[in-house]
Length: 284
Length: 280
Image 1 (cartoon, helix red, strand yellow):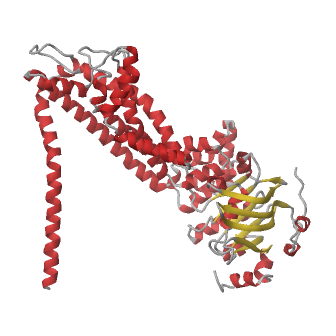
Image 2 (cartoon, chains in turn yellow, blue; image 1 turned 135 degrees about the horizontal axis):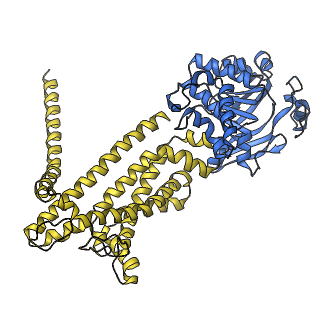
C-alpha cells in the first residue's frame, strides 16, 4: 500500500515536471508571437501598408508592397526551379536508388540541408552576381532554390517510400513502363506528402534573409523585373530594424508580422494536406 | 501461333519422364525447364521442371518458404525489381523464353498478376481498370468497352455499375480483389498469375473469387499459389507440390500431377505427408 502511494507520487511528480518543461519551451514561442503581433499590428493595421512602397522617414503612408511582391516573385521563381528537380530527384532516391552512388546523393542532400544559408548566398553571389556585375532577383531565387532543393528531395523520397510496394508491383504487372508507373501512379499517390514538402520548403525560403542580402540585395521601389535587384520581406525587416527611426522600426515589425502570418498559413496548409496523405496511404 | 505440343511430349523432352502422371493431352502454355533461381548468392529454386497446361488452373502448393511465390514471380519477371535476383534455365511461354526476354512490357501484358493485397490504385473504380489501357494509348471508345467488359468478366459490374466514379478504396476487400482481376484482364493477358489471392478474404469473398476463377479458365491459363490445400483441391486442375530442400535450403518441385491424382494417389511420400497434414 505504502509502495503504491510512493509510485503514484513519483508518477505525478514526473508528469508535473514534464508539463512544466513543456511550458518553459513554449514561452519563447509565445513571446515571439506576442511581440510580433503587439508591435507589428500598429503598422500592419493601415491598409496603405500593403499597397504603398517605402517613403522617406516620417513621411506618412509608407508600405511594404514592394517587399511582399518581391518575396512572392523571389520564392515563386525559386519554386519553379527547385520543385520539379527536387521531386524528380526524390523519386529517383526512393524508386531507383540501390547503388552506393545514391547513398552519396542522400548524404549530399543532408549536408546541404545543414549548410548555413549565408554560405548558400555567397555561392549564389559568386555564380550569379559577380559574373554579371549587378544584383538581381534571379540570383536571389537561385540561392533560395538551392536551399529548397534538398528539403523537397528528402520529403518527396519519404512520401514515395510510404507508398506500399504492392501499388508499384500492380502497376508494373500490367506491363507499364517503370517511369510511367513512377510518374503516373506512385507520384499521384504520394502527392499530398510531396506537396507538403514543397510547401515547407516554400515556407523556409520565404523567411530566409541571409541568402538574399547580396543576391537580390533590396530595392526601395516596386520592381517586377527579375533581372533587377528586388526587395523582400525578411530583408525589409533586417534593414528597417537596424535604422534609428521609430517609424521605420514599426515598419520592420509590421513586415515581420506579415511574414509570420504568411509562413504560418503555408505551414497550416501543409499540415492539412499531410493529414490527407496519411489517410490515403492507409487505404492503399 | 507458337507450337502447342502435347504435355506428355514436352515432359519427355525435358527429361523428367517421372512427371508423366498428368493425364489428358492439354497443350502446354508454359514450359518450365531446369529452372534455378538465386537471390544474390542464395539459391531459392533448384531444377524446377514442369509444364503448365493451357486454359487450365494450375495450383502451386507447399509450406511457407518453399519458393512458390518466387516461382510465380519468374513467370512475369517480377523478380527484376529485386537487386541481385536472377534465374537460370528456361521458362518458355508459347515457346519463347521468359528468362532471357528483353521485352518485359510485352511479357507482362501477356502474363498478368493478381497479388495477395489488391492494392487499388488511388483513383475511381473506372479509372483503375482504364489506367493501363489509357497509358498504352488505346482509343477511348475501345477503353470504354474494355472497362465494362473487364468488370463484367470479373463478376463486379453488377455491384459497381452505379458508382463507377467512386474511389476504389471504398470497395470491400473481396470487391477490391475482383477489381484487381478486372484491372488485370483489361490488358488482355493470356496467363493470369495469382499469388494467394484469397488469403486476406473472408469465406464468402473467397467463394466468389474461386467461382470467378473457374469462369475465367475458359479464356485464360491460370496459375495460383496458395497456402490452402482445400482451395487447391477445389479449384485447380493440376497441382504442383513444392518443398524446401532441408540441406540446400532451396525450393524444389516434388511432384506435379492432376489435382485428383496428387491428392488421391500421391507418388512421393513427402507429398502424402504434406497433404495428409503430417507437416507444414
